[in-house]
Length: 225
Image: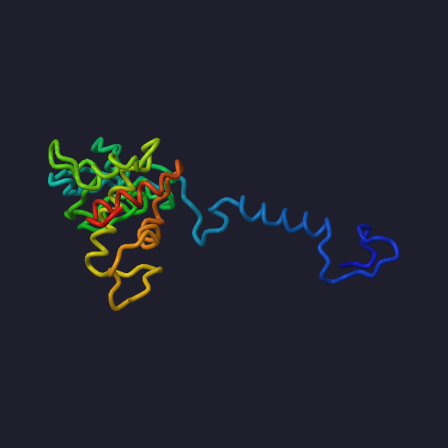
């Protein structure tokens, strides 16, 4: 810091590590400038606003046991294909950044955030959404457990919670450990509350119905609640 800095109190010794009002303002202004620069300035190649649109592609999606042939912009996310092109609106668009889990679906039995993947990447693959879990009038065990234990309030996250729980239970049956698994030699000796919470941590419930969600999952897994 300059010893002649007007922000320095008279009679004091300047400190090289002292944070002053000036440094805070300068640092904040620099950060704001960097975060507001257009992407084209920061990118290696400038964006060409006159470039022709990408050609549509043909995609075949096996969704809930039915084959759907779609002509899509190759940049269409799987979530938008489900909601906007097939009217399967059970999968919700929450954050649209893969942080809330409301859009979770199952692809080949594995859970995935459908907002973070492109539809063209799953051509021919088996996709299950919340609409495909029930068997006619008979709810999936997880759906029934969520209803019985009030595992939802506003319901916006519920479809993603249930699809994620289906995938999570499949992972545990296959012996996949989590961050809190104590015995890696026997990762699913007991599906504890801590295990369930850790494994479901990618699905956010803004209504905070987490205790009821845990109980519902334990019931569907055949464990005492």
